[in-house]
Length: 369
Image (cartoon, rainbow, N blue to C red; front, side, top):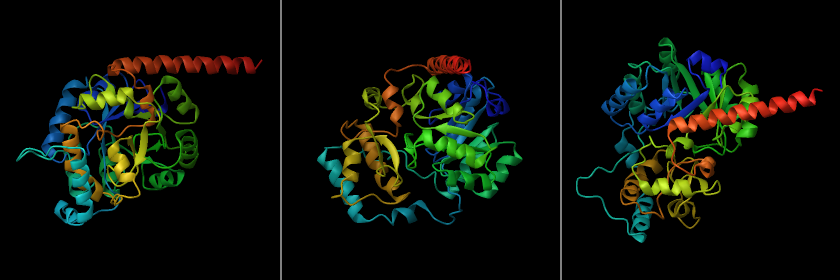
C-alpha cells in the first residue's frame, strides 16, 4: 500500500494511525504504518518526554509523528484560572445534578481530577513542541487546523512535515496557503471533532482543491477495501484513529468502555458538543443525551466545556458508571467487534486492500475488452 507520501516518510504502508497510547503508536510503526501519538492529554512536559523515550526504545527505528491541539492564532497571557472563572454557575450546577441523578461517587480527598483539556492553550502546546522537537519525529499534525506560522517554520527547519485536519475544501485551501505539507480530509463519520461533509464527498474535493499537496482520507475507514476506495478518490493514504481503541496494545483503563465499543453498531455514535464544546463524534450515552437535551443549559464553547466536565468525566470513568460512560469514536465502531493486535489489524487491512485492488483490476480488464 505504497504512495509517494509513504515513500517520502519511509513507511511500507500508507496507513497513518492516530492514537493516545504510546504502545499503539510504536506498534503501528513497527507493523509498517506510521504511528502518530496524540499529545493533548499531556499537561506536563515530563510525561510527554517519558512516553517519547518509550516510543524511541520500542519503535525499532521506524518513523513516527506527533499530533497536537493548537490554535492558529496566538493566545497569550490567558491562564487556566482565567478560563475557569468564565464558567457560569448554572452549568456547574447542571453537572452536579446530573452526577447526583446517577449516583456517581465523589473522588477521594486529594485525588487528582484526571485529564483536563489544556493542550489547546498556547503555553501548553508550545511546551509539548519544545519536548517533541528533541526527538526524530517526521510529522507534526494539528487537530485544530494550521498551527501558528512560527511553528510551521520551526518544524520545517527540522525537516518535519506539518499536517492539518480539514473538514471542507475551504479549510484545506487555508492550510495550503499557510504552508502545510499534508492535509487530512476528515469526514463526518470520523471520531472526535468533525465537520458536516462525509468522507466520500470530502476527499476528492480536498484533493482537487490543494493539488499537488498530498491528502490523507479520514473517517469511516476500517478495512482494506475502504482504504483502496480512499486511494481511488485521490488520497495518498488513510488516517485511522477509532480502529486502534480496541487493539490489545491499547490502554483504555476501563474494561466497561471496551465492552461498550465492541458491542456498539455504526448507529450508536452521536456528534455532540458535550465533551469539548465543539461537535465531536462519540458513543451516544445518557451523558451526551443530557447535554443535547433542549431543556438543559446547553454546552459552552471550547475550551470552557472541556474544563467544566473534566472532573465529572474522571469520576464517571473511575467508577465505570455505564449509562454515562463513553469515549470519542467514529462510525467505524460497528466493525470493531473483537480485540486484536495492531499487527493483526494490519494483516487484515493489507489483505483486504489487495483483494479490492485485484477486483477493480479484473473489472477494468473486462470492461476494456
